[in-house]
Length: 252
Image (cartoon, rainbow, N blue to C red; front, side):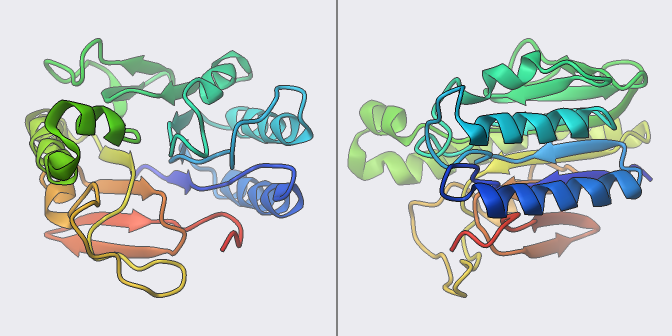
């Protein structure tokens, strides 16, 4: 069994700094205590655009580097209003015992036997890489404005769901092949799953949500780790699991 720690929706900012840093620090302490083999931060590490000299950036970078001193870390691009494109690039430069991989495009990423990262050159691998410990399929935040400009605003929401469903099914052959080889397969995404509950207990039901549970299960990953919704909840089907970890802090 491979033990992976998932963190999500940290929302570091000047306003949230005390809560975010206390919660994330304690969660890292627990992950290290449990000897996790990898860590995933599934989007919205920051609350909004931040200057590099901001205390929130320094505290977040310090904790991510501490986590990377224990295990490899995968960081996924979150909501653009919280995490403007390029925000996560600096984390690639942190150094440490293990590397931080930033997934800011649709891709598959292999955690290798020597605990390094290999990313697919295209949106997925053509075949299962040799000598890997875990295979991740990454779907960061989708740019709805780009889709709207392409297919029209009225059709954009439906088009996003349809295209993501096709994309996720496209991961299935590689995930199934990896599974047959005994390699754990994990999906990581940032967005709303149809029918999920907000932190206030309100069901999210509408045509403008990125994912359905059926589409996520269609990737044939053993586990799917979405971020974005701040309430912990999960779904299971035929031994496969989808789980929101919830926000690391009480940002609602």
